[in-house]
Image (cartoon, rainbow, N blue to C red; front, side):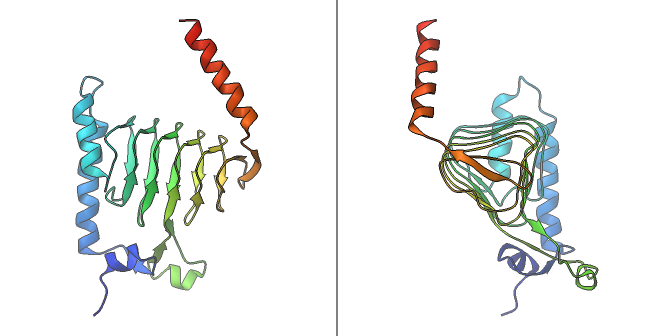
Length: 204
């Protein structure tokens, strides 16, 4: 049985985006993002409701600061306590899976969309996608770009301005263009920050 363009897209095969089914999905996304980007600070519950309608799956707790943009929305899956600051953009032609307790600084961009290197094939409007996944307990710094096919592990900090082109393992600080592991996150880090939190609580 012949695959639809949407099935080809989601499976990572070459596809053409100029398709009636995909156009309808994108129209839905445009409507929802227009509505949520127009919400006011007094419409907190309505904004959350719109994001839960837009995304494929969500945790109970999430917050995204407008403006937010995506291709389809329905291929974005976020866990509990997801937070994205201003100007987040996710091109979700393939699944984008985000774990629990993941925080985005402003202008984080996630791209699953790719285009053939060969110009002749590219000019036939053929494109493809590669899934992106982000684990639990991850902080992504501002103006970071995450490229197609990248997988980021658990307990990771990505420095601002990074361009993530390859997988990042769990338990590290990584930064740069291209993004590279700088060091592991250690027990000393945990002890230091637990102490800082304790000092904060004692000062209240």
